[in-house]
Image 1 (spheres, rainbow, N blue to C red):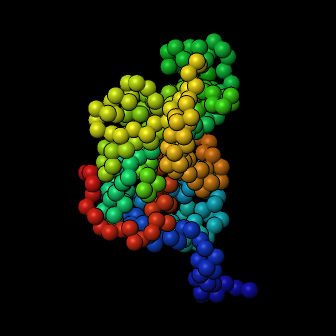
Image 2 (image 1 turned 45 degrees about the vertical axis):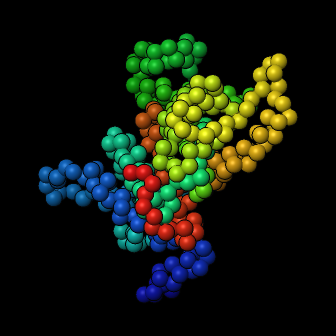
Image 3 (image 1 turned 90 degrees about the vertical axis):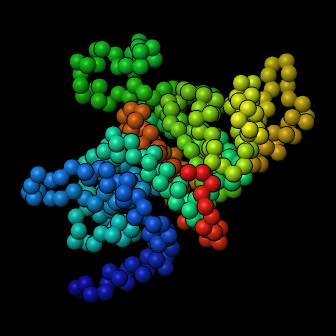
Length: 350
């Protein structure tokens, strides 16, 4: 049976009735706020009209948002855009339109990485949150999660050289194809007696809205406390800070007090001095608030149908990929927050 004039419209209506989540993203997010930042990637004038023009930068940014939400590799993302009407509608593509291929997607993300626009895009959306009444309030919760990278099958000597110098072993230069697949920035770490290789996503989440306000990416071996000060959100209307025992040290507590923060950092026992009953009760009380950041990590994993596995090489690319993941979480979270809170209050911090 030949296709009718309104068949595609009817199919879209059926998708909407079925609860397509991308409809809400399209309707409730002002995507045009990102265009001025993304325009920095399109500053070079075309030397001629030969060849196809570049894809719209905002369209490509929305492609990366889809990738972050659904945890798709570049080639799988290309296939899904071609295959799924919901993806095409979100991107504003018709059946007859060209679809960005995997190489184009990789190149655009690489341009974002080199220009350092991931942090600027995150900051731009944070200002949008504040403008719509979702400024950070009621304190902040600090935590970190491991993001795994493809494991490296190196010899002990190779790992020792990487750890000591931070550079690839000299012998790898003789095999460029091998060198391109080696990540010398990621590190091994152990958590709950399980070994992991990759990076850490350090977050500061505001207590009221469960939105990510500040973030940083390091290799997985970096202790959480080393990034504590870097991700403290000075724009939060409350000076209260929650964190787990990994962030507790005499020096960090003194700095928090000096800067006017009220700490709610979990206590930890040491050999010969176990926690008292009062301290254990305090930990349980703090854990009820601190668990909100675990919801953020859980939602990130759930939305992406599994924990994020980096398919990139190097810290700069990992930072961009994880930063886009954090921004995509905030965008999706913003859509489901009650609109009654969007009171149009002035930003707390600029």
